Length: 214
Image (cartoon, rainbow, N blue to C red):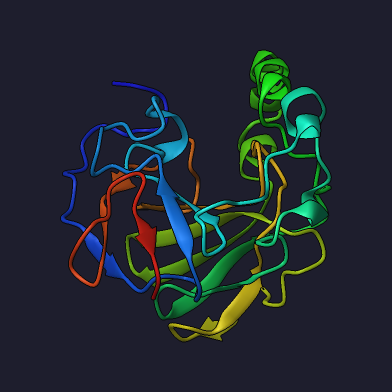
């Protein structure tokens, strides 16, 4: 039994969600391709999925010589600051804002960023999730949206939200190599003891490399 999964609770079936955005978003680290999708079962991330905003050419930002050797400001990415919406109706049960949006790391800088992973893991869930919103869709179903832009969260604990209602903006906080959205579902609010829940979108699950356009 890996950390982040609790014994004695049967795994429930998938929860069906709406895509929490509009526009063009590239799917990465999808559980349609492998489980655990992020290479770990810690913090109930077994069935987590990532979405990266991209342009008409499928790029999150143009690649330049700087990309290969230096970190890039998140503002250079067209997806930075795009609206993130509730993928399901429910009640907001957790909000964290105030984490900085750090530089993006592609090319050689991404190797350095990988070497500093332990620093973020040592901070626990907040160090990994960054700014985030958790929505309780029903008893035993909590959906979390992570890596939001600092200062963009515009819901509070206790708020009722409907699918498609704005909750924040795409950012680069927490354990993030470039502006993107990490989504996961779990059976309780505490990710260190929660059991992960599979997710689908309109009854399906896109694989990595797919560009979705809700």
